[in-house]
Each structure stands twice: as C-alpha cells, then as structure tokens.
Amino acid sequence: QVQLVESGGGLVQAGGSSGLSCSASGGDFSIVVMGWYRQAPGKQRELVARVTNSGSINYADSVKGRFTISRDSAKNTVDLQMSSLKSDDTAVYYCYAEVRFGGSRTAFQYWGQGTQVTVSS
Image (cartoon, rainbow, N blue to C red):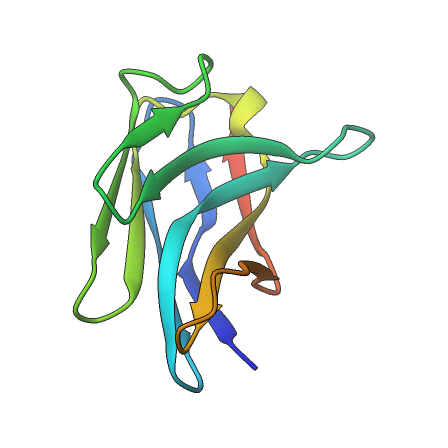
C-alpha cells in the first residue's frame, strides 16, 4: 500500500506565493505519474499539474505561468510551487500518484489526504 503525505498550504494573501510537497512511501513500487488535483467547495476535483516518469508535464490552463511542478524521482516526492495566487485558487489540494508494483504493468492510483490552500483577497 502506497501512502502519500502532503505538507504545505494554509492561508496566503492574493498575489502571494506558497508551496506544497508530497512524499510517496510504502512497498516496492515505481511511480508512473505524480501530481496535484484540487477541489473547491461545490466544484468537481480538477487536475492542477502532473509530471510523468519520463518528465512530461501538464498544467491546467488556469495555473499555467503561475504554478510550477517538480519531481524528485530518487526521493519519490513532488512539489508544487504556486505564485500570483488568486482567490479562485482556494481549494483543497490533493497529491496523487499512479504506481506499478514489481514487474506488473498494471497501474494503481493513490491519493493524499488533502491540504487546504486559502487565498484571501
């Protein structure tokens, strides 16, 4: 069982910056994709950014140019640096990872517990 532990977030003023970190642990696994989703009150969970094991990165249009995702493959961690924050960025941010175990080609998805980011205007 893979565990994702998030840190960071909290209250930040509009226009400010904040960062999130996520660490994956547990068992013999390899990470295929790692990234961040977010869910605002009354809205569906949406992709924020993701990075694959080949280094391919995708961002939601709403965060392009403001957020930066980075991954440390050796440590199984992923960070999200957020800048020029807006009130619309207020949400619970969830770390997620798609992993494979041993030599299996089946990928399993795991989620962190979520961390609140609140942007005050």
